[in-house]
Length: 422
Ligand code: HAM
Image (cartoon, rainbow, N blue to C red; front, side, top):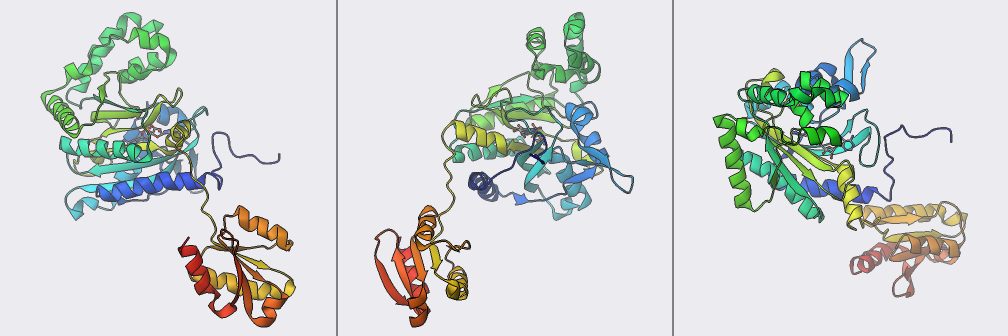
């Protein structure tokens, strides 16, 4: 084969797109219901935006970004996530001036140079929301409720919500030190990545996937116990709201999430129907991010859910039935003479709101009927020599097998009646 898609990317073929559309439509419908408005940002941004917001020592920024210099000598990066671009757009377009809370949602591809495996790709797709402008924990509850509602709406059951607080610039430094102190005796036994994390970003040691590191860090001090008064009150309130809403969760002190912008609430939705990459989605608060990007101090919270991973779980759970939509009518033209009248009829059907197909390969009537059958057409309209001479069409109902001759001029009405009464 001469060309293949780049490693870690997928072609989403016509058999799959109905499922993708169902997932995206479900998300859009819910976002609207919860009062979120769509935002679309560019596929690439200044590299610096991601380095600053996500943190230069995070895996994504240090190893996984698709960064290149454009012809004008600027360093740009294909977006590895949606939050920083949305916050950049919020600041740049002064959305704060519209007053109140900005509740935004997006559907976007993301690009990360990761080692591809099931559920992990170099181009993946996310559904996300960002709610910018309130620090009230009730907003955290709304955002989480939306994510859980989305999965429920798709029928995805085998999942759990994992919750933690990663503190804030007031209490995190103390915790970081406690964690370093705890790990000091066995730093040398940690994996190489964790040894670097120990120096630069100790919290990230907590979600190392290696068995040995996990065991060594199993009894690490609990971050919740190091939270400042404000962070603790926030976390307690959120738990109370989730309990009140009947949303089950587990608190996991090892959940830290991968980016530096997080403050307070951090959460992930995981499913055992996924393999090693078990996170369906994740999110959290980022109360310092707007300011970091150059806006006024403004709190925010959001999440992103992986579309590919939702689809993997749907397939696993037998929820992925999404057939191509049937075509309603088929125009079978016989002979060259019938080509233009058939095209006109096809156009008239489509203008009338009926989905219609024809044959462009000059196949026999029998073969055309087979195609119509395969497409699931309710009606076949036959245009042959006799029909042309009499300005009629032969209308065949593929379900009742009835066939009748109708005037060309009124056949649209008849087709409408047949397919709409189906
Ligand atoms: P994230 O945890 O990096 O968070 O990504 C969210 C979700 O995107 C993951 O749980 C996963 O389902 C999906 N995902 C990420 N990378 C890949 C990949 N390489 N292949 C397949 N799926 C992937 C964020 O991106 C944050 N921006 C979420 C957020 C929004 N936080 C606050 N607001």
